[in-house]
Image (cartoon, rainbow, N blue to C red; front, side, top):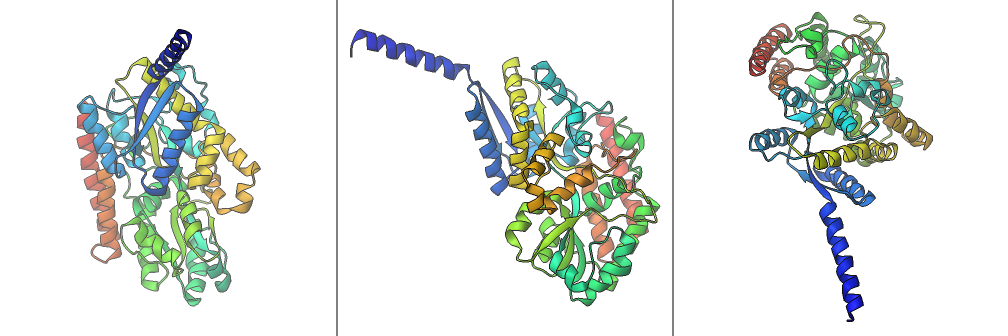
Length: 433
């Protein structure tokens, strides 16, 4: 090898080393296993391949609860990741931890990334925002509850998907029962039949604007409308119109996919899995509402999880985090995520792009969640912000199970839920100084 070549190779290797050193590495802790985890890995790999300045490493940390617990422990030890995925019920805990995160809107602005919150679908933009509308977390795997139905079953019964619960009780359920089906099951009673029940009917769920404007919040779940709904559920259960198979998500989804249950209330994000597994024609409709409560039903809000930028990093790593968020929110990547997973697109541009590509003509059920999130909003439809909400959901699940197994009355259960939830909220308020 001559000197010129040696110098040239040395220079080349030096430049490569310099380029490698210039790459900023960041870490992303998430809770998505299985096929969803593979999609997250693919998105991270695509981001890394799309540019040469940053490298992101996704790390699966277990369930939502395990990921949140790991992130809190890591932050206390000064070993937190740059980005952590936090689910809806844990959002208040993270947002309430002063100094633990950098608001996503501020992060993007500080790093020169154009951002307009109005670009985001209305039912998406508010859940992870503060009282002034500033987005604190970046919506990621966003979904909303909808009603899936076995189209073959409804055709056999001679009915259509009900728009109201009155229609369900008077027409749909009797016909489906007569046709040999269990008319209705649903997963996640706190999310669908509580949090989004209040939003669908524009009812106040908690004081302080559903918790957004203060930490001394009290839940207002013991409401006549939801007590009436659960009393109807018990009557439907006794009549064979409704069945509850357990607290687990799959406990109630499986009988629908097996063709035993005609209609199932689940997540818009469940679309892809259902399409892969069932051998009957299915579609979806918006969540029914009680016409006795409102004649102007309002939008639901998102569940799922958001990405939070954790604090404690230098400008270069924050810049890398902002670049990744910008990449995720791009129209092409949102369409990819929406089509690959069934989660709703978070921006209007991505929704319109998916429509232009014919996605909803081929899969009408994939559009229902997006349409429901864009229904007219109301005073209490943006979501809720309550600390220790993971534990509050546990109380709800326990009491709802007791209602549906005949161990307690609806009235006693809601008194218990409200009392225990408010004790938890008071304890959370004390932690906020």
